[in-house]
Image (cartoon, rainbow, N blue to C red; front, side, top):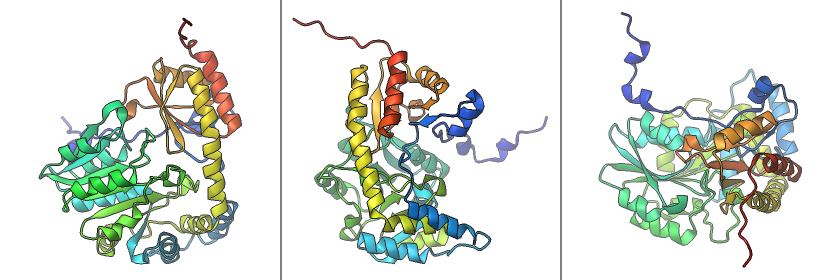
Length: 377
């Protein structure tokens, strides 16, 4: 009997559930032959990228036969200027996902633990398991970020802590005073990853800029993740970065892939950084559209959580997988959250443009049972 090829693979890798992305426009078009498809599943920016970024990609495309600047020098310098750090603090990556994988590769040995609040970004436990580590998931009450529970979960085997703020998929944030108190109690030999992929959308005045802590807490391994996929709308180009102490950044220079930030992505990121007005338009559009969308969902009997991102964490009275399947037949992609380990009643809905949100609400109005109203006394 021929042995399966997978028998030669590290067995713990076969236990990892693959990352489940939101459904694509192309897949829905193939399955249902629909032309007018709207996507509310992947927290993409409905306004699209800066026109300057599009032009930068067009210009850079003429040189795609050449390797990109391996050090991403201009991008590092531009980010350093914007963030108030040195270029040596910045590590550009192929999306923030690459930085997650690099960090677990650097800190997690087989059998080590990583504390992660639950639910959160699916790549954290995947990266930890890929390194041979053990994800320790901490679920808070009502899906909130339980900082006390995370602290209690830290053991001598803990090597990393992941903190996503605003959190994907719930939209929760950790405020400045809470973050300072939390970090003061995390052991200094534990690497803390603070993922701020959605930081541009956070509107609470108490929301911290975690980059300020990198040098303030120079005695501890602290990595802040940022991305150009969300507010900058460069999701397809896969460009992100980590901010950390230079001595820690030098480790990732040793193990990252060569030319990990491709040339077109670097040029688009530089152009987008220079177009602050476009980012402001994206943030304002999201804020203006989120309230009416949330109100419309609540009118349909959906429980909607307050969000500091560009999406809403929603609990429906019905199971979301069949609801999402019905919406797809109408050309609307909404994401159920079963892959996140959340029960089937939950969905995460990206905030679209007002006319897009209106189309989603109209479809939900026909598919959902009428909300139960209390009789007046």
